[in-house]
Image (cartoon, rainbow, N blue to C red; front, side, top):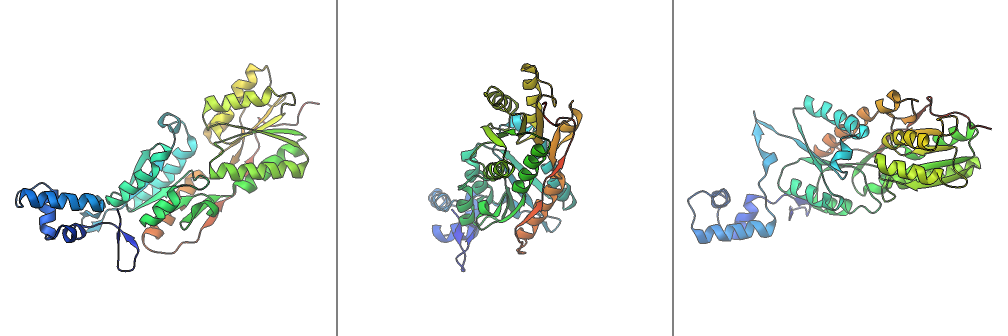
Length: 345
């Protein structure tokens, strides 16, 4: 449980708070909570009850090294660990973060968590002083982390649109503009039936892309169909099959990440289809995977490494009390390659 400062803002519970509630000195609290001799069993029990009721945890981040406060940044990602290890986006994003942290002699505390555990993970980190701030990713519509962590007083930067971020500073890529460009490009090639394999529908950036896809389809006069997946190769392949089994199957499909787009190449082969002659494939989040596979995948490109750098620099400002304005960092840029072409007559 966070305490209240004189100004009413949330702050970490301290040993002094525990001492005041237990009616003892701060030194007695230190002795009891570190299980050292020097206080009676009854006093120790009273101190422990007070600490538990206040939600006190040891403040690890308050340790000093050579006279400097140690900074640790938290990042919890709600993805299966096996899938995360294959996700080029997060590998590049974390690399960008680490490039700044290493220069500042700081650390990243990374947790692969279940979605429902993310609030608890960040809460425990902050109350226990294990982090000085956090990066919040994969924001959902009406994400429960936003009100809970804002009430906690956690310094954080949201990777997502301001409409999802509540009071937090947010950094985002312009997914709507990128989706409009992708649909217009395929329509300009002559595709009139365009499919899309999306990520989970409850993710904020999926909703933004979905709205942009529908609008772009209407603007170009094409037909659009969306199948929902979870960013994995298996689910991406299943969603691709569902689109290709339709009577009015698409001649081009946009995938919400590179892994699902690569999996679609195998699905096209199952159907005896040639890419791009029979089916054009366009991936989101360009990566080496897109460039090395054959045919090389057309993709929506943005500098994910630089995005990680921008996000962590914004968080350092927030942790230092410097006001930061939420802003769009990049707009994805279309990189045409061998996987897209005009449809067969």
